[in-house]
Image (cartoon, rainbow, N blue to C red; front, side):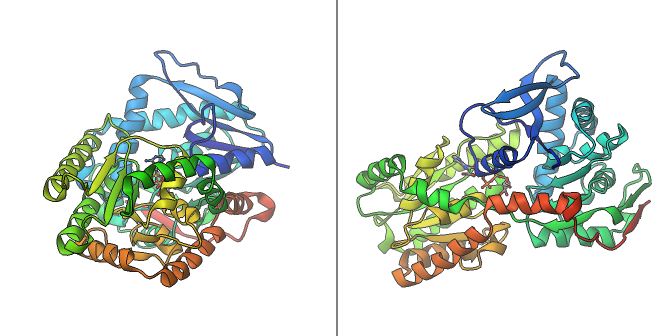
Length: 468
Ligand code: ADQ
């Protein structure tokens, strides 16, 4: 049996895995031989070119260190100040510094040089996310002929946004060096296909060299990720979750909880969400004192200016809603800036009458899946979901909203709060069935089955693209 090599920006650390994805990928490596490769999290002036191989909690991990400058250019720079905002259609928040691209490629080349000596010819290499688009190119230039798959956890951009990315033609050619490229949603595959079939050479800038791309050897398909909804159902009934529920019930009394759980990121639509809640309270005075919004949003990527700014904006907006509606004995919302473990999160999800998941754009959004998994079947909450999350393709029975339209979101919130029990049960039953159909273990095994030589399905039709 082939070994599986998982490659991601960061290797998993010690202790219980934080997210469903890490748990699922650990399971893959528990069932099949292989190892996980990535950055150790350490910065040093003179990193060794060879990977350190360690056993971390039973998982075989190979990792390298990076220099501070390379890491900055690769991670905070090209990956998170150019690719992330562009792929999320926030070109206004992109910062383009052309030297970051060199750092991005340097780190990918460094990954490849450290990984190549560890590979056996029939190892299957599964590369994760936008930090590592060039890895197959770099590995192949060192002679690796392994089957290689790439999974994009974030949305694929529209052609216009892609054109705004420096060296996008080279990045597209890098994607063509994989045997399989997996995306979250059908809309992402459609955007990719649109680009591959109809890209206009004339839109390239004067400084872009001609790049020849041939996707005939690359299969592109949607593999929507999910969570483990039954594990969340169990967690939501666990002692730790029950403790959280009891503590919250004491504070909430009979107010219904409207819950948001996100990393603090401008793609998650947090200011729009608070504005929608403000409109709910303004338009429906009868609901005041009967609801409470809890937004959990720990800071992430806070070395990047745009992430600091979204934090400041959210502080100001929450303050405004408090100032406008709070009474000495009633607070309309709580904003918590720390992360919680999964059992506590599951408790919060279960207690919530409304799960407010309204990103402006999101690859999938696992919070939506986790919320569904955690509900009490007898008295389930309602999912209000952005139609721009990949999860919208999975969960048509959610109350779907345009998160930019805060009037619509406010009205969906009202409908969710007024929804009769029968309808909540009916909708939740369909959501839970969908969450089970799209669970994370099946996601990992279906991607790997497609990538494994014996199981590979026919290639897509030949597409030769010449960039001028
Ligand atoms: P993220 O942008 O991080 O992931 P999301 O899928 O919602 O977005 O969350 C990932 C995980 O983080 C979830 O398991 C969630 O429980 C956890 N999490 C979020 N906020 C938390 C908090 N406040 N405290 C504790 N845990 C928290 C990227 C893409 C997504 C895609 C995932 C997986 O942006 O679109 O769904 O990868 O592919």
